[in-house]
Amino acid sequence: MWRKFRNWFTWISRPLPEQVRNFRQMITVRGRSFELRPASRDDIAEMVLVERWAYEGEEPWAEGVFYDLLSQPHNSLFVLIREPETNSLAGYIIASFRPGIKDVHISNITIAPDWQKRGLGTFLLTYIMTVAQQINFNRVSLEVRVSNVGAVALYERLGFQIVRTRAKYYDDTGEDAYDMAQMLGDGTKDDDGQLSFKDNR
Image (tube, rainbow, N blue to C red; front, side, top):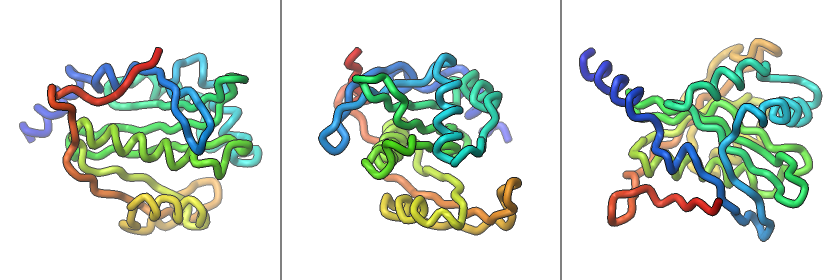
């Protein structure tokens, strides 16, 4: 009990490292350049629109959920990918860090329809797994609809395994979900002990 409290207190008093929370850099995915950066409150309206577009008019997350998570920088990370020429939002990922069990839980990953099947989902998942390793978390987890065979295949290709099936997990359809997880190796740091993120602002 005391150990869990101490871990919680340490995490609250020492949030995600600055290099993880505050960055901006250009990346290349399949030969195309994009901007990678954290989300702000100004991005949320567009994130909701992209989610609605990606889910064919449905809105899996209410706008208020985005605001609530964004107000918790000590344990949540929002990462965006934007196309630099038009500044359009191509995709995003939201992850919650749970220090007590060294788990990073991916709660939302959405790619705009025009940018799907171009490697952006793979990039975002790999990015979060890299962050998790570099701050010494050892597990990444997520839920996915059983019917979403494309997503399941992607996660399995990246090393995730089905842990269990949750019956009637999704309220909107009553559909089952897979709990999937991947165990990570030891975190890696530079020789000086600092995280190896680059900031190209």
